Image (cartoon, rainbow, N blue to C red; front, side):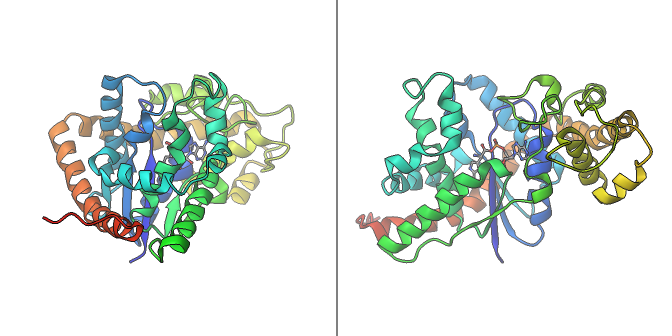
Length: 333
Ligand code: TYM
């Protein structure tokens, strides 16, 4: 069966609608047809300054949310990145075939280091995309479901895979990004010119899965639209309304064209009120299921341990092959 891999950072108390609609829904959809590996990337999460207890808590919260959303641990390997040491080991090898200039061109690094300047950014943040390439290549993933903001990292991953294969012989499969156009970039509710994100958005611009549903409903109702009146999908001229239509369509399965027709003679307020109800209905069970799962840490530990075992089976084979290909002498046991 073809393989799929993706990862998410445990850097917030809750995933937001960008994560959910842009990526996680695809994780869930793909797990039936693919051999799926889904990773909570705690190694990536320490590239920015962090608090250890918060990271631990957020890692559990991430696992609980993923399961609550529909990741089925009997089908997919759901695991914590640091439980599989091969990620860091392969990242080292890949960093030795990554150009300094090549890494310097990564826009996420430029964005994230913009505040303090490159002088204050860590080497870990700089090599972040190389670790991401290792995540993907360890499993020889065919597909990687992500949002638009990860496209450049996937291109780097393909470049590194191709370069390694060329230098050391065919080892890695080249992964294809799986980016669903309609939901590839969910935008901020208060500033529809920027993507919804933990670092850039104000709280009012983000819908969190685990937020009080009443608050989420209020955020939807106060979303920024435009001075017009027409409910029409037009990302260029009506990014706010288009974003609401995208969220509406994705949560209900109704086509955008269908919604445009249904709301043709109604106002923005009407659309927002309806969508607010839809959002409440969507998040309420997820929120409840997440808190149930969080009540039993031992069970979460067991599920994550099983995921790590499954992942390591594959990762250890890939790493052994890579070590052999680059000329490391095998350890005699
Ligand atoms: P992260 O943790 O920032 O985000 C997780 C996923 O959510 C998507 N996403 C969005 N999609 C649409 N609209 C948005 N506003 C939005 N915001 C976030 C992201 O594209 C991502 O798919 N570097 C990755 C984590 C990672 C990874 C990997 C991904 C580490 N290793 C290997 C894939 C494969 C990241 O920071 O995602």
